[in-house]
Image 1 (cartoon, rainbow, N blue to C red):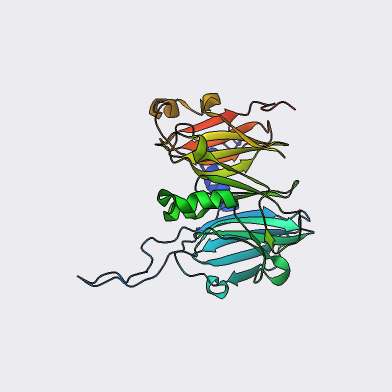
Image 2 (cartoon, one colour):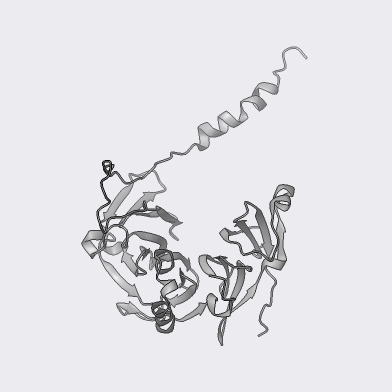
Length: 319
């Protein structure tokens, strides 16, 4: 009808208008180094692999500030962004100030936590160190160190196959705000810490689980990521194994784990066509709990390019 505007222009420009409101900036961080001349050998001890930037973010319980922590090589950068539009506050903590150097001291995992309304940042490094930087001191000072499980540390030290940089580095850190538990991954070992136990400068683990112990000899079972599904249940993504997705439950007897691969469903038909056989060793690259409709749903990204959703089977261990 004449005089009635058509909806076609609105539909055609809908995405453009969305980007105008919800656009984002992309910043690329990379190492600037001189290219070696022809026939020039690399300096011994220099870093041969570029760093991989990692970050974590959290909205504080006061709902006033958003905290982002990023590892940039051996350095830590923290941004505090007030939600009311005030100016951001940036903190840069040099790794050299704490005795770390590029490569072996690179930040490989971060987790933003909170203690009495004060933000803290837990930092895992390529050499296996885990430390807590307190926001009270503008994150410059290390408040606590987290020690590894003694038995797991001895097993890794005695096994020459476990000394590669990828197995020594802290691969993941995951904090649960209600229980104040921290799950850390290194090699094939998951270590659980209770951050509320004491204020000692060095904190010992609450419990740990070594995935390689129950795996066949040809499987590495490297822990890539851990996500809390609830207060006592977690999901773990592993690499180099035939069962790369595990459910874990914290019980009075300790940590217990179960395979979750048989309960997975493909997100789309393309994933179903690409997927390989279940008998092959593979890797789950990333996992993320799906909140809202059901806290039992987990989304996973697999090494074959598929995306799969997995439902948690409740009452894994009877009480």
